[in-house]
Length: 250
Length: 250
DNA sequence: CGGCGTTTTGACAGGCTTCAAGGGCCGTGG
DNA sequence: CCACGGCCCTTGAAGCCTGTCAAAACGCCG
Image 1 (tube, chains in turn purple, cyan, green, yellow):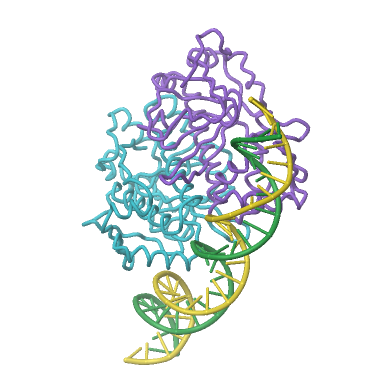
Image 2 (cartoon, rainbow over the protein chains, first blue to last red; image 1 turned 90 degrees about the vertical axis):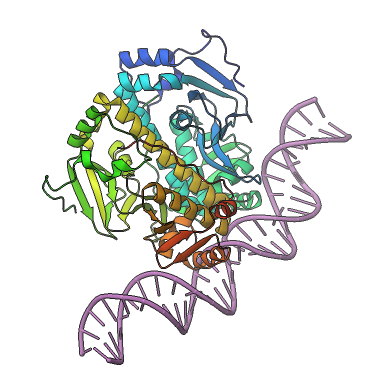
């Protein structure tokens, strides 16, 4: 695992393509200088490989530079639950850096590029850059918020509501990450992935998707997802349209 | 809301009863001195009242000094999902301090005493005590871990497994918080609370509880919960017995 | 063309929800 | 002292939503 290329081929933080995203905050020169030294490598992972595994310790934490990933847990008999998806600018592996070991796995959904940061220097970051430390906590809190939303879905929403909720939120997040073109986002997952995220069977996910498509709220052909009626989808999901929130980077 | 008594009647941090818990780390004298000034009040809330509400901003964050609380979200039509329970030494309201507004509510399950910390000085904490900042991030990550576990339950576990999982984990946490006496914990919630946490109906929760009790893994009479066979309960839950983890305080 | 992964459909079974009603416990008030 | 109401627990019956099983259609790629 980890065909980390020798330093020098990696994207320098001051020309990070993600920094252009409107949803990320600006860095001060000092912060930027530190982050540049904090990032020690880039990791390229191909679709379908789990680069972080439940039960393992991890010496690194990562941010997604490009591509999609998902966090998941498996039960002994093979049942899988996808906890959340990670998009560009999202952080993964923080839990593994703070706790003794990972309690979930992370798998690349597409070809994936990650920025690599050493866990050993995390405390250094906390000591010298409280602003960045604050950002990291913010990120952790936001992740929790997303899971809270999913938890409500699995616990209290019907299959149709749940599906609408997930698609709406994925669309909004993908849009924030700059992945939308002409109102269309390429969703890289299969219906099996969706089913595992929704806590439903594959068959029923498919039928629910059909029903949802019949409302004309969405259009999903192949991998291209188009949101045709955001308000309708939000209504079906039983929610207001989620407001985008500015967030820190790193 | 908030019948905060004038300073002076509140428990000083250096004689905080929770510091005796084996699961909490030691403070350095400096840290302790800071935390003492960081805690500006104590809040007493009676059972059944929501002291933090979804959509509201909060100027404070809290730790539970004594009693039980739970985080929850409601849908428009009244469906409720309990996200997690908060026990002594747990922190609540962090999200509200970091984000613009609370995305969930928190209700006292029993008579509840909270330590109150001002959000306005949180950044001060981050600047001056990276060790405490680190702890807070750790707490946020741990909370996320707990929700991850619940998410798997709601998504992929049957009613029986799910119930076993929740009871096992609540028992372990209550025990860590020093709430067990002779292997018995007083669970202050009703079956309706359990149902809302499990994402099940009240009726089916009751029947599932009966089935679970028939296995002799647990005994639950009135409010007194006794774990009779931890390994069996863990097996039913489809998990190993969770290992207690040391954790920081504040 | 053949093979494989994904999507789609139909039929059936069952777990869970909903509806309904009764019982136990306890505090309040007549 | 007893009746009453409220809250919680318990149980039964009926029905729907969702899971499981099975098989076919589709699309992609070698």
